[in-house]
Figure 1 (cartoon, rainbow, N blue to C red):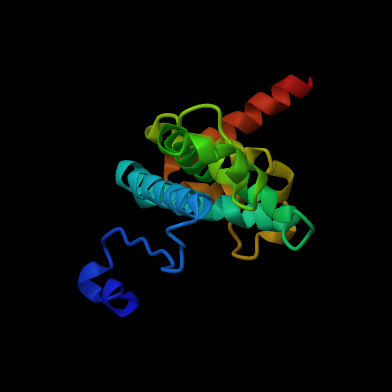
Figure 2 (cartoon, rainbow, N blue to C red; figure 1 turned 120 degrees about the vertical axis):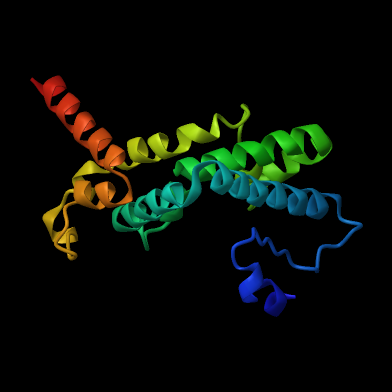
Length: 182
């Protein structure tokens, strides 16, 4: 199935794979698998709504998270705070509460608790690019560190390559932040 999914005619399609080893008699395992599928389906919805631009921004956000805490104990927790992950986890959490309510507490206590850890539904998909830029701005000192500019491009220039509007949003937040310090 993996070979078929990766054929050229399927590469532009959404492709989601799961392991076949879920025990149908394990209600927590089944609910977790269903939540993972809902999470991944939300990523497909994100891509449909926002296109590659969102995922280019998310890639930059992932790089910042890695620079900030990569390799450190629990450093991966920042990954789950990226807006596309918060959104997909909110979708899975709402799905779990609607379809597997009796299993939510057990999932919350396990290694896949992030799939159930939202009290609210996901937000508007079209807000995700701006939320991602705002998330990255929280790591401004990391993003704008000249040592990290191996490409020769500043961080704002990298954002502008994705779309000029994201570079402008960054610049506006930077100006706003400087005024707040006065």
